Length: 374
Image 1 (cartoon, rainbow, N blue to C red):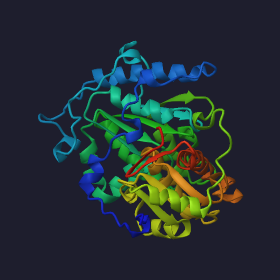
Image 2 (image 1 turned 90 degrees about the horizontal axis):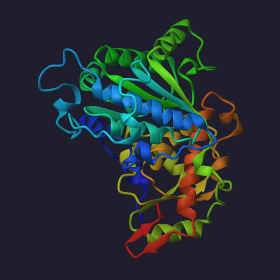
Image 3 (image 1 turned 30 degrees about the vertical axis):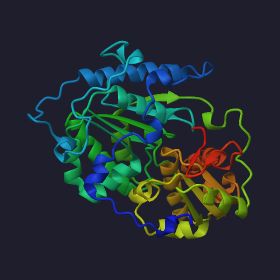
Image 4 (image 1 turned 90 degrees about the vertical axis):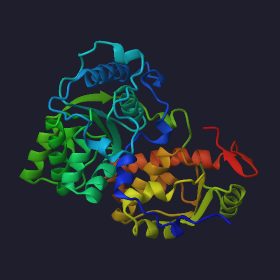
């Protein structure tokens, strides 16, 4: 019988959160020269060049006052990137010392234009010590370690890459603004992706002067690179696939030993019992996520948890087989009209892509294993 995710209660030790600050498995092999810029969108090729130059700055930058023996993540003894250059050929070598001169570079663009591919390529091109995490993972790290220990853990980095940068409340804004300021003062270079320009983060949500002041302070740390283009996950593809029926979902779950099988509503309730930092561990070692009865979500808290879960599933290239509503109907119209609409759009984009994998007739199933061809 397939395992249920709702029966899992993963515990993630704080030091494991630090050790896990790496690009998602989906992006282990990406490099600048594996990015395929759209010829119709010159901003994509320009971003590759600019990021290559930024990587050269990271590689050539000195860290005045760095104590002998290293700092930060090195003291945890859990990462293998410290001091080891993974610099890649191609654009990185162009114009060493040129490119953005601010301590941070910020990739702003729509969904599916390859911002995460570019961010991970920058991480691979830069020498260590370095770390890569989503915005949720960084804020979760602060919650687990405390602010001072987080600063201590990250201050020895050459590069901190933050994917899916978004500010949902003034508390997060002050926290992240203070953290990044401390890291920049320590010589850490920053790279981030978002669907919102830094000066517009939180727009339409918070108008307090203190909040706006923090946003302006963050914006000053970044050189913005706009990446235009169409969502590659859906170029030339139809709308999200028609959902499977419950019998077919159960058949696929039974055919794959590593599949999980859950009722959608029950899984949503279970997510509320776990900190979002545990969602990755929740789906570790799962090969196919099977869901029964996907329904429209009208509660914002539940919707935001599903956004995080969708990101973790997409990070791991986990196919999804689901019955119920198609994923483009997952969130209510009110959700898309609200301040978190870009997060919900990203989740729909990613879940739809995973549903194509999980529901495809091309899924090849062997006894004891499965492959989606990607």
